[in-house]
Image (cartoon, rainbow, N blue to C red; front, side):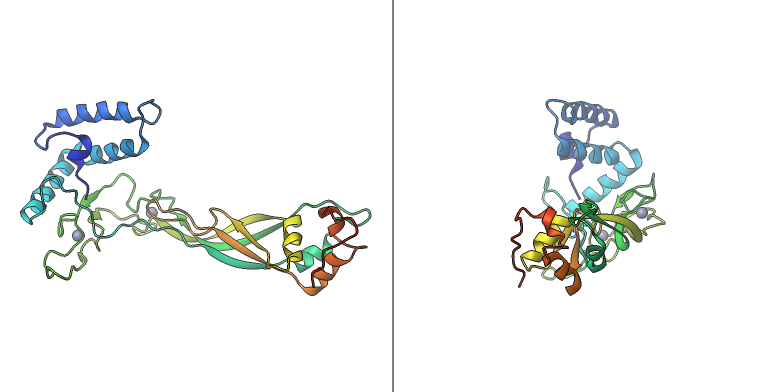
Length: 271
Ligand SMILES: [Zn+2]
Ligand SMILES: [Zn+2]
């Protein structure tokens, strides 16, 4: 739990109007379009005002602050929850067979085409940011609340002083959603089958085969989506190529290489 009064730089007993006034002043100062802009501060003051600018939520927040202090937290110390919901998305690793594509490819042979890319359309199963809640995990227009059980620390108050147990109500996150998103059930992302069309650079594929390394293509942002501000993973595609296609690549007469590699008739040996 953050100290929203510190973020807005205003005393805790300030009247609601003063909070509104201070928020407007800081929002104008830190707006990213201004020379004095600061995106992080702008996000923070907006988050603080979302709570302190709402009479009911401010009352709940004040109550939690008082509770925390009576539990022995030093004044002014920020309350950091035990766990964060932020998760980075995992990478997805798949392999695709390119043998047929290379055999069919006429690039470099007389009268042939000049395909620089091989396109593949496939379905991948990956996490996407939930479209219903925009990744926030709660129903649009609803709020989260400082966890009433732990006061935002995410730690079970009744646990032993040495071993800290995670708060069973908020699972350590420090806040609870009043209404979880009906689609993602609070996770902020959902698993989905997605059809994607990927373009593979033919020259890159062949160069990699010539180096006798297994070609791997990486597509940014096509791994699992992160949650609550986490970054997306990447999609790694390992290219499988059968011997018949390798032979074709190596062959100077039929070879795909003649146009793709600046070696003239001298082809690097692949083994
Ligand atoms: Zn809790
Ligand atoms: Zn959702």
